[in-house]
Length: 161
Image 1 (cartoon, one colour):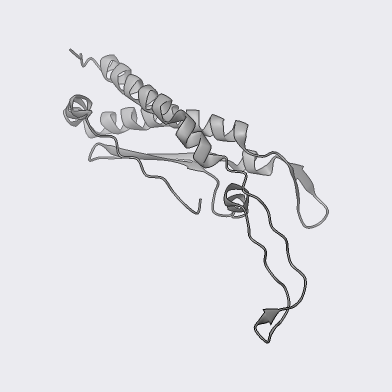
Image 2 (cartoon, one colour):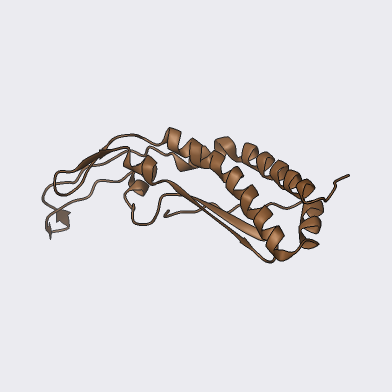
């Protein structure tokens, strides 16, 4: 996606301490699984709120709901007990940012005497789907992440007070 939102979670020292005492492979597995389950909430919300419409491809092929079908999630965990989840559209679906942020009037033609002449390509209002999904579900995602981390650590035999 063109613009990204980065969230750092702090204040979970107890969970971080428990992860650091596990083998690297196990802590990365727990981190990836918890991130995937938590970020799935954002993915589902984006798919349900994205504007559904036809997209006309070259060659006369029309598909409906292309942006919703291309929404995806990438999850990674690093050995320093940190991880990331990227939810959105791939870069090759660049026109999804036009739906998210809208477009302004553009001119086709020549500029003469300080004025532009020719046809305009029009203006499209913004129909945001990623930003509202993030704002609406951020607390639910955080709660799900913390709960899944604690449950996964307890499954590994580590108890919490």
